[in-house]
Amino acid sequence: MIGELKHYQGREQAYVKHFLLSEYLESWAHKVASTWEEVAYVDGFSGPWQHTGEAFEDTSFGIALRALSQAKASWKGHGKSVKMSAFLVEKDPGAYANLQAAKALFPDVQMKTYPGSFIDQAPSILRDIPPRAFAFVFIDPKGWGIDMKRIAPLLRRPHSEVVFNFMFDFINRAASIESSGVAASLDKLILDRAWRARLEARPGHIAEKDHRKTVLVDAFSRTLAQLGGYTHVAETTVLRPLKDRPLYSLVYGTRNSKGIEVFRSSQIKALCQQDRIRGFTKLSATAAASDQMEIFGSLSEMAPDPSIAFLAEEECRAKRLLLTLVPTSPASVRWPDLWPRILERNVVTKTQVKQIANELRSDGTLIVLDWGFKQRTLGDHNRVQRS
Ligand SMILES: C[S@@+](CC[C@H](N)C(=O)[O-])C[C@H]1O[C@@H](n2cnc3c(N)ncnc32)[C@H](O)[C@@H]1O
Image 1 (cartoon, rainbow, N blue to C red):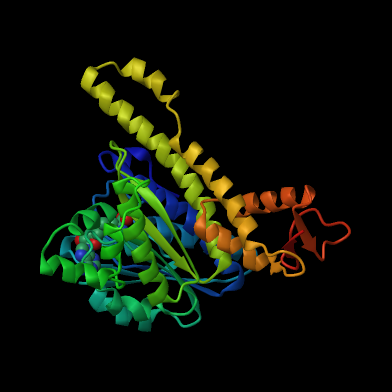
Image 2 (image 1 turned 90 degrees about the vertical axis):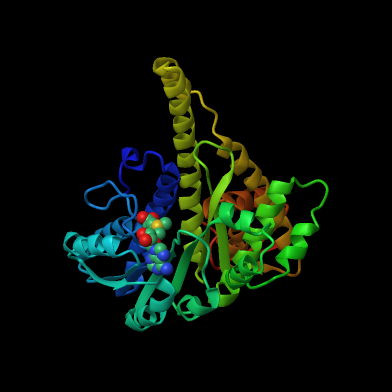
């Protein structure tokens, strides 16, 4: 469970990041613990940083450790014992002392802390994660000076997945700086250097700012996918609280289709939450400036949600993509191979994709093979083709 919004004043973007993390990890820890006996959480830049909650409820590791503790307790209630462990790195000595003090708050999670640099500690963490554990790795640096090759062995660990905070706003600015030092740092973060040529080749109909975001985030997503061997990579954008500009991108990598399913539904909830928080933050800022709190208080209920239009467009795109991915009869595609490919590219839930496919089946556009007598919706045994 995430801390209250009051803990995030002046850093509302962190609320959105933590909301997503909390939604994802609560569901993830519970699902993973249903089939695994050990679950591990790794936080490479754990803080605590700018936190005000007394029980670290407004920090990434506090949110994660609470999710692991809850999943453990829930499965214990069903007679299943799950071992939870956490591996947390913090460089700042003051923050590190606070991190160690947090151990007492989470007695159900075996917690190991590492002082110093995450990059240096990555090999030790890789050795320390129990081999039989399914692991989630959160990499949330303050900047972007990360040598991805040095953390590749950790990313490649089997039965693991990752969320990496790609500091888009800073990286976008750095990408325009002509300095060999900056270029060398960026080359360690984004391995495929073709992004520079792609930045130059902007199609006329795409706005400069959108083009730069797509090129940089796609290039980094490919680096993450290649180094970690992830089959599904997805991104969600966190905006500046008071400006309509992307601040960072949370890039997710997994080899598990269940993972991308949970990520997309958590992301959609986080986008709606982001609308709400940004609407409220913008109105509060305006009201503070003009001292008309009451007027703006009622206006906040009327603020439009920009994500609604975005999500509707994503659903249309998902339908178009589904139609291009399904081959014409007699060829067919297995349903469990189809829906994850749509979720990789579009911000939709698995339920939405099922609904689209069911509608296309009803109107005769799609044929679903092996449809059972009493079947109501698509299942893993089905194959799909276009009529
Ligand atoms: C953006 S904050 C992380 C916040 C935290 N993940 C959260 O969401 O609550 C980055 C943290 O990483 C620490 N840090 C900076 N460089 C580091 C490094 N090379 N290795 C590990 N920690 C580092 C900072 O002291 C700071 O506490």
